Image (cartoon, rainbow, N blue to C red):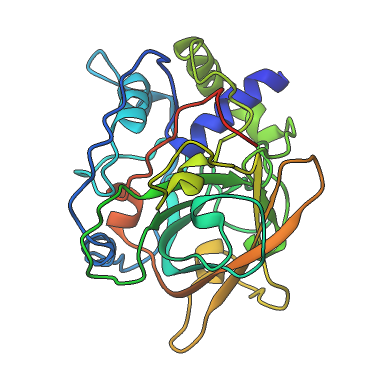
Length: 312
């Protein structure tokens, strides 16, 4: 049951992964941070949707939607796609802000001290629960742009990462109470058991999924901005946590995380290559948020395929 929960919930974060033999196209996408953000904010909701996951959404007239999504997520580096459904994290809120590393560390790329990058992120809740009092597995997907100029056309693709708090969900009252990592906790909860049929389908369809489904590597960040890639050092683990005293008592996590005018939402960035020896190296500071159709249905986070050759 634990392995089933892992496969099911890890699919939920990234849109799923499969096919070790897929050739990934890495040709840079010619757009700017502002181009992407303008799409994300173009169609705000009048009221918060409550989209629900369903086993029956995994198929369409004989098509295996999960399999198609897996290929897309591995192959496609585009930040914006034509409208699609996020099958397991359907409800989210998007942010823009600045990634800033201000502490010395041994890692490469945009983990280096002094690095600053524009970031677009999406916070979400797995499955159908968005309100406190229910089990919620919070996710945090981010994409870094190798610039702080919002209108500059990128010469590199965005660097994407995926974090989650607990794969089976928790009863945390606030999103800002949680610690989200690329190798999250695993709890076999009623939320997993309730969606067992869904989980079984995912497990059967993706028996050849990513080589190590329990951890999401963050090497795209350590390679970002590097012209000499021979000696890249990547942290094995990454974690983000909201700074204290930012919690807002709202029933729905999307209301909780709405950023009011002239306010900010700040998360600490911590990394490690030795289990449980975290070092806080910087912050993500968000200054704008949006709950929109494009946030939920067009913003795309490329999934980095597993690599065995990383230097930790």
